[in-house]
Image 1: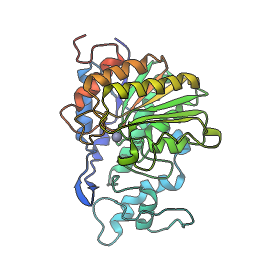
Image 2: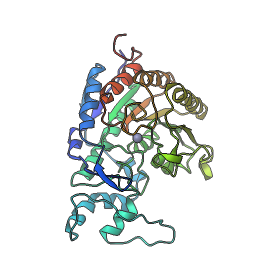
Image 3: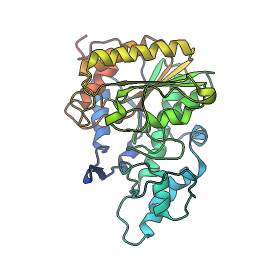
Image 4: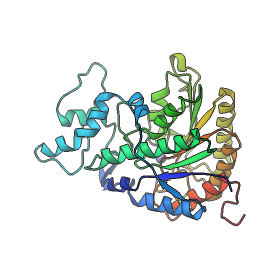
Length: 349
Ligand code: ZN
């Protein structure tokens, strides 16, 4: 059996967001602590064990995110509580366009500045959990740097929609980007492959003008799907980063064959980049029964994807991104992890 260390920080369960809104209707948030329990079951079902992520040096986080954004995340909830009539979670109700606008000092204005949408409510424990999510990703980085072929980080909250200065879509600190930045200490070139059903817009933005970190994303076409404004094929990077971003959007409802073909195209590009290490931003929400219903990937599809990505032969940090509550969430992670180990998706092989 392949050595595949797995990490998690149980204290991230304290972040259990409530607010969410779709087409003007407030709904329960989907990024619940229950996700972690089901994903832990998936690790166990794949015959793997979980280690607690230690608190670690977060220098790479400070290179990825701006000081004022980190200060906002740390202090926003306390300030929000002091505002008259404030609800239990920080939820932005303003969406500034930023160009030519001035950074405000008040909490309502700063919430709008640093939160791209209403899908990232910030509660009492969000900052502490987000930091521990970073620790989890960095524990997997450390394992890989110490010689593990790959390591899996069960990060909550997820991170790939957060850019240097902005929270969005359940994400606050970009765990995958921070992992890539940390891997740069040992590798001149790294790649981040994002196979979440949603485009990895935050990760793309963070590395958009850099040639050392190749970003690639396979996702449902953003023309009518979150994150809507980024994730198109024509976005290829800028400046020194021109040619170092590859988006492979798929028509809504696409199943295993086009999804795996797109992953193959991305892997070919990773080989061409000469990457010394890979971060895999692993969303399981491309599954046919995920509540977001963007693509129709099957459970065995995740095992096939894992086998193909592992065949690259690169040291790989696997960072959990999306994947929401359905009967299949546990099975999908188990199938992926079994596929990574060269085993049959349903555990029989
Ligand atoms: Zn997603």
